[in-house]
Image (cartoon, rainbow, N blue to C red; front, top):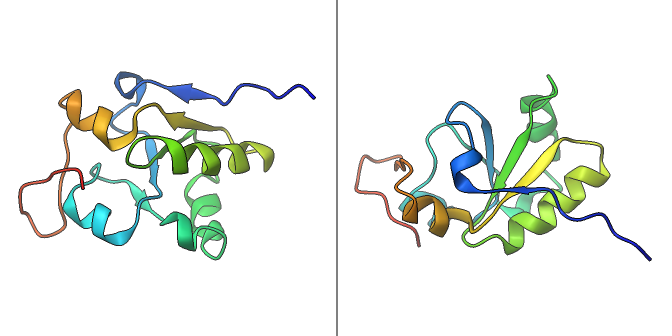
Length: 114
């Protein structure tokens, strides 16, 4: 069987106005996240799939993020199978933070990767 390679991008290729889907759990999100990201934990993903299709309904590319890229790779694979233009962010939030990309918290505290 031949499988197409998983579409992925480096953190530097993610536009700040792009649609970022963060699939980390609530405690990870609370520690720090990409401003404007859509947060749907992987554990809730199937039940909340409609939120993503609504956000990406205009054909926007979905940039999928987790801590290091494993969970987001699984979600990206699922989205691609559903016909959605999705890419995995290589290295996840650790790479995002390491590249000095901006992060926020909902309570205004200093953001970090949990």
